[in-house]
Length: 282
Image (cartoon, rainbow, N blue to C red; front, side):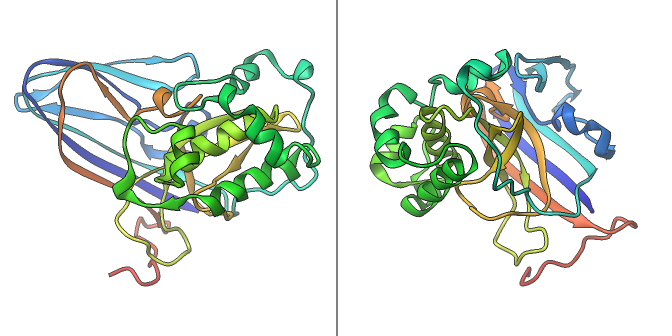
């Protein structure tokens, strides 16, 4: 299937301000990109010079100095996605820590939003008695999905996994932070993911947005998990991976940046570029 992604984000800048954006698609899926995947950065006086680099997780990052005034970040892409939902691997095995690849070990450690050290006894009580591997990983995902209530109004940038565990409410990133933390406590490497997840072959659920999910390392590879939606989905488009949301913020400004417009969409299209109808979409 073909997925068209697009975004148009505007900030009002009071002063020239250094920024970093992670708005391109992940390098691992570049072979599936059919068009686009460029970031346009425009100020009131025209195009803003940018420079790209890869961070320590391999994400494609863009640096620039935003001039004072209105700043516009926009882009789109057409990506060929699998004609299948998220994979299920009921017999995937969990490797002993000593056998994990060096680069995977960091996804067992505490990070900004994932306080692994505070959760060890909690996770052991809830999941320590279960068979390791896929069974335990899915049990963690399902538990978080059942215990946390979704509410956009309860979002805040400082909310950690322990806050989510205590308050039992949050947005997609909060679900994933709690699930990632509990997974790491059970020696299942888990990393946080950002990307697009539109209403692909499901009924319309509202205005588009970027989404968060996570991945666990079993049987020598990463597998998709989503504690918010908790069901296999079509059309995920990967943007970036990291230890938690702090590593993969779509924009980071080193100064004030007032958000004045935020538009994101991800839709299935046919070979001619026409959007595929979505059930119940107005």
